[in-house]
Length: 447
Figure 1: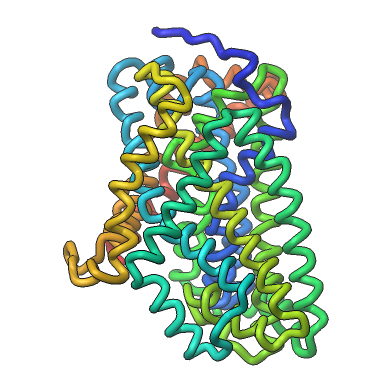
Figure 2: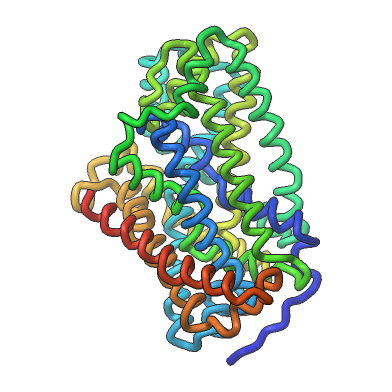
């Protein structure tokens, strides 16, 4: 087995830095953008209850598995898999490298939209009704020059952060942006709750209506938990490689899940009460963010200020998650290809741009180019969400709980003295999580 020392200057400064960076990787647009509209469409609390359950079971198990593999394997996903499982597992690790590229190819498009709307909120939206805002979104997303330039700007921002490394880039960025995101969201939550009729949105989100429980809501909650916590691609394997020896993995994983869930709940409180207060449809779907919310801001006093704050939240969420995805590939290039970090960032961004431009153009000039009825953007999303991430999650669980178990579970210092807890954790990671992931994989392919 290849053993690689973990350079001290390349580790997180401590537990807090690691948790904030990991929370930033986990929340992304899944928490700020996707959770509110899915909760709105799936019955509020009928979706929230299974979402919380799967967060502390499925997400916890997968996160712990990936973080532990990174720490025990002392490297990114390819290096760690080779160190722990041998050459065969390192080949499987390349799936994570591929997923990182494909995810950013379409994720950067949405990140570009966030930048576009932040700019629009600063100069002032030219439309105020949902219909007019829908037309505005269509014009912006279908314009080749605007969409590609916004995407390039977003990728450049991501590359800028990653180029400064773990401490000077990713950790510093997370320590600044995560508290800022929390403050911005609190401002919007208080503002929304102060509107007449907003309490109906709170009841919708937190008061269970058991008549709205459905198998679809259960599967959707499980799927969103899996994909919104950035597991399956190797993000947390990469971050785990940069943890110092003193950081406790069990408690750190618990805090990552708890804080990420808190951000999702805050996102729901930020959007759904305002929707009810102004008579908007909570089941508006993906357009809830880019069409419905600007319409709401236009009816608020100082609405432009709140629009700026809201889209700042989206940019922060998109940036922190995209940074973790890019770091998967940068770590691989530095460890396996022996490139310097600045060169790796430059090379990676060039390839990323080549891959991602067709995704940006799939809403305009390439809208008619389809594979099995899906645009380039939708195809990339489908391949990752319905195939790549579930398979990557199963691979991580199998390596952690079975192949490399003797070298992995010793990293859990807080429960090492209790064999029963260790066995329970092994069942969660090796049996429970793969079974649920397989359910997501099969249901996604069927749907």
